[in-house]
Length: 101
Length: 353
Image (cartoon, rainbow over all chains, first blue to last red; front, side, top):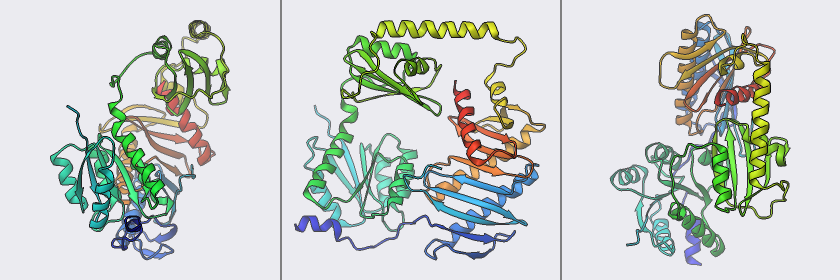
């Protein structure tokens, strides 16, 4: 049994990024005003998401294709964002294997 | 001389590496087992020699397993990959599969689980050693079915045409069943044969499948081909010479669509456009958006970007890719996200066919 015990005895040495569920609000400069994301989720990634979303809204406007909402679908994550006076409220929803939409 | 495949085992725990090395040496194909205790080391090893299989732990310092698997899928697509973890969170299963792993497995902790795990690994190692030729084939579906039937094969052919999928069950050289969408039996077979292009894969035979087609394959193929010819003839007679027939014209007639823009991946200019005053500006915006969110998906290890949906006061929009073609589709504002999603499938099916 000593052999089998090895499989469950590994110490939690490293962390693996978990996609969080939650939302956050950013102003037009990309500064996070308020959010419900867990603190374990890196701030850097929060800013990268915010920047990508704000750029998408801004460039859509420039292309004369103004958008008030945008949803980005990945196999394991959905990012939804609503434009708010140049800023945005952004929702992150991880998808489980049974989620299809 | 028998070749021994190489397996690369990646885990930051030296005890586990040693244990797995011992376990894997029990595999009947007697593979060579190499080990690495961090992602960068494993990447360097894969650069220097060919491996058949990578078994990768997910939770590791510096470079986690999802990062490694994402890079391996791009740089070494021929390597089979197995994600091995003690994390019970189902999110990681979904994310690992979305990155293209061949197998996701919780670290085994019983004799039975170890046995099953080793069987799966052996199957992964041996898959390409089965007899037969592999290669890119460009044949009509009728050719493929005839080949299967003449050789008295038993198999299930899974055929895809854009978002549409159909199956044909062949048992000892006879077509016994077929289905696609809501159709079964001969109507499904006729529908599948009417598809002009697509892909197919051969799945293991399913002898338990209930028989719904009783004609000989020759008779069935002949009748179906005649029916398709007659239908085509009928359509030809009804064709309005002024009517647009190109895929882009057909797509632009789909309900709710305002404009269509198709772009070749990697090229700056758009390929075809309908319903836009300034397609180049829209193409630039669409390409930029797709590229930016692809990069973001990579950073988050969320898998390849599927689509972007935008809702606006003037029109809605879908950005997505089908094969090497990227699409920017404009919709009337009354279209809901669900309707846009369904219609996008139709657009892709029309484009593919």
